[in-house]
Length: 245
Image 1 (cartoon, one colour):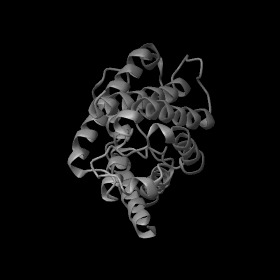
Image 2 (image 1 turned 90 degrees about the vertical axis):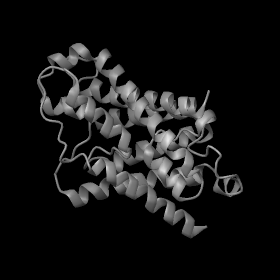
Image 3 (image 1 turned 180 degrees about the vertical axis):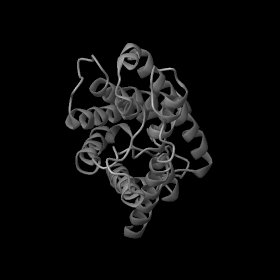
């Protein structure tokens, strides 16, 4: 399996299971309807685990543009490969979201909570305030990237050529999943913790264009925060990692 295909499949699995758990909790007449935040955070953590296990041996399982950019800033991934990884992540996120929509089609059509429908596709703040909302996304991604840097054994990888496919890796699948669960439970309550630009932007776009019954606007005025915040957090984590040696 090529790294490009691995990133598509890994991101597809991440989004299928992650967006899927939100749909199960939010949408009308699902067996998980009315579930709580714990179910969502566990679902997202396990979604990361599945995606990393499948893609890790082939691409490093970035599955997230913030991870790709953070690794490149730290000199642990080649900038020349970054764009292809991000394109693959976008494709995977689109396919995963479409699969969720197809599976839950009848439930989307019967759900009257328009904010809930949007929440399946995209994150949003409990209290809209750009600075703390941005910090929430940055802090969560900062924690995630520190996990990526240190769980993947930086002392060994520092001697590996920069074009190697360093990332989460299947060895780090379970620890990274636990990081994501911890981030969601502790830091995710203010914005819904996208901590992944592709996880938010691509499903939000599909919310805008797909015929899922009655729906509200896609809240594009907020969309820059889960795009910029994770990148800021990733770059900051890379800087801290490099400064600590």
